Length: 511
Ligand SMILES: Cc1ncc(COP(=O)(O)O)c(C=O)c1O
Ligand code: FES
Image (cartoon, rainbow, N blue to C red; front, side, top):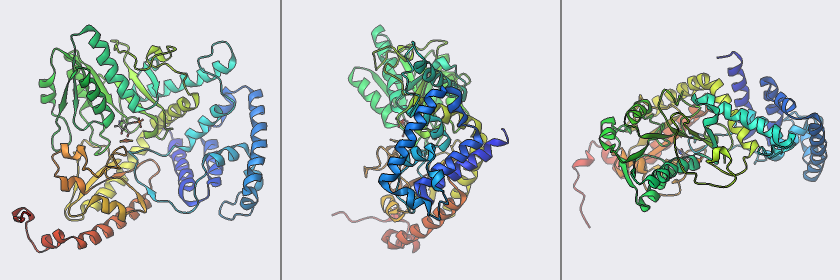
């Protein structure tokens, strides 16, 4: 790992923290620009962009900037604002103007962000790489007849390379999509529909703790006459390989098992699953939305045929993802979106270069900083977990060893999870997946582990990311301890437990 990376990451972290909580949005521009200079990212603009376009864009931005500041009156405010220390000149820089508009948010303090599985904040260096493609570099990357198309195409292809590098693939095997949901749909429905034409392979194996978009894709195929096996998981959240092997039939077209679970962070034995699938000549798809950029992955070592990737889970933008589709031996699938034949005919539609560049830069940074991020996140995770488990009647959900440390899911017995979330309003947390967070139903993932409804209801997921600090973890620990204690004191069940009553022996009267 280069000596630069930790410094760059630290600066990015600082920039983001400042931007999101402590200072007004304008400060973000200043720190972001400095960070970008330190990492050399801004040079990218002049490397890829013809100078004429730069000048035109800059002029327009300056005019827009003036109008914007005049209209909002913020220039005068900030010229004297002691907390930013930003001069009016600095505020007039094109980057500051764009970023100010892009990052407007309420001043004052916001909750500590500890929901990294729902989404990750975008790394400021990613935004810097994207900006030129939202302004001057607007060509259609599929235009072959002029420089506007060539320059965006070049950037898109460079991004494809960064993503491929991160997972040990060939850039030609990376298909841009709108996110992991689309990649999962494309892989599962695509392979199923290709095989259905042949008529012989009509069976898919997945598992009960998959993300909803995998489960729902399978449900749709069931309606079309497909047979689906939903494998159970063991109490530690991992599938049993012997059960998987026993479930594979001659008609099995695909096995779809996720790499890292989004609710409990367990890491499935993907390498072993891949080996098994290859030996049985069954395609292996893995939803790696929570794994890419977080743990080392190699599609060849793992014998993965299809892999789903999401931009916003690895400090990139939302609305973009990728699907790895193996070329050798070639994976055959029907496209679910047809049209102009872009992306090897597998996903038609004009690519969004700014988003492609965003996920590409996020992938490049993830590879560069994985070792450093892992070290930090592991240390923070251990600190959090030790503190939480030092409280009585508190347990970690999912396997402790085969576990991505940035996802810590803990059950606090005798506390109602939703009440605890309400009591922890100063911390952005969730009791499970973002998609199902509106529902009061206990998590189907925890239920699949064999947790009781009560235990599933009393669970909270703590998502630690690249920008989480030790001070934040310490604050969270103190807050959780205080408020769990407070809520337990309100609970009659807790009172009984304190008196030494074993709740399992109580015969509750029926009404
Ligand atoms: C495991 C997993 N798969 C898929 C998705 C969906 O990803 P996207 O938001 O990119 O569609 C998520 C996001 O929550 C996820 O955690
Ligand atoms: S966004 Fe993660 S579960 Fe839906």
